[in-house]
Image (cartoon, rainbow, N blue to C red):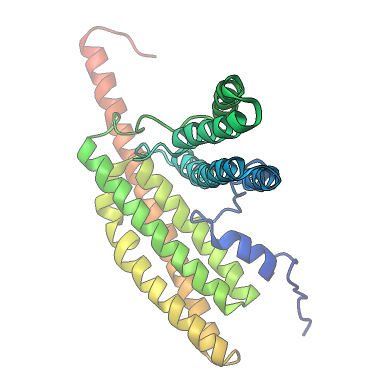
Amino acid sequence: MAKRFGGQFSPGGAGQASAAAGAPRGRLQRSPVGARVNLLFFWPVLLLAKGYFGPPAQFFGMLVAALLLVLAAWLTREGVRAHAAYEARKLARRPAIPRKIFASVLTGLALGLAGYFAFGAMGAALSGGLGAVLHSLSFGLDPLRSKGFDEVGAFQAQRAEHAVAEAEAYLSQMAQAVQRAGDPQVMAQMRSFQAVVGQMLQTVQDDPRDLSAARKYLGVYLMGARDAAQKFADLHQRHADGPAKPDFMQLLSDLEAGFDAKTQKLLLADHADLTVEIEVLRARLQREGVRLE
């Protein structure tokens, strides 16, 4: 029987699976941290090089400025990631710490300090202010308001947000365990399972009232699947030809079918609720004497 070829960068191979492992929703998501963010970690090196050839006071000032830039770069990277996670969700709280805003302030302070030793007080004001403004324009501001909490009850939205975050954490840990096993077929099956779970998560976010019906799936079942994935990874690393692989793939297939069936039931229930609301509205309009075609 013919055997399908699979390499690291083939469809379903380890290269693609590793990229998908960090995407909780089962999609191949591009990292929000791009070259612009990574380039921020390079500028402190230039400040240190400039200060190295100057007097001790200038070197100390450039060292402090470089440390501030490193902290600003780290805050920017974390802020970009937090903003991307905020945009990906329909229910999301604003970040507790406005990382990108703090990073802009630190960038301004660092460049102002460097400008003081290089050009004096006027240079410090210009370079500091320009650096803070350019940083804000390049990376934007942090989300300052929570979203999705006005359309539904705050308590329901909070419960749904917590349940979705917990489910995504289980799914991410499960994907990391499967990636550690290093089997392309299992990774492909895992990506398919991630996509199905992502549909359920999206359904719960669209209507937090579905959480009660889906809570067991997003909590107990995913936690058990995470534990099974971790045990499978340990066994597969020791005995790649053992029965652990077919058993675990069957488990993923069964879980995928169960999650998909439950999601369809949730969607049908939402559609039924919509139909009832439409019929009630039609009846009210007819009582008001509005003629409906």
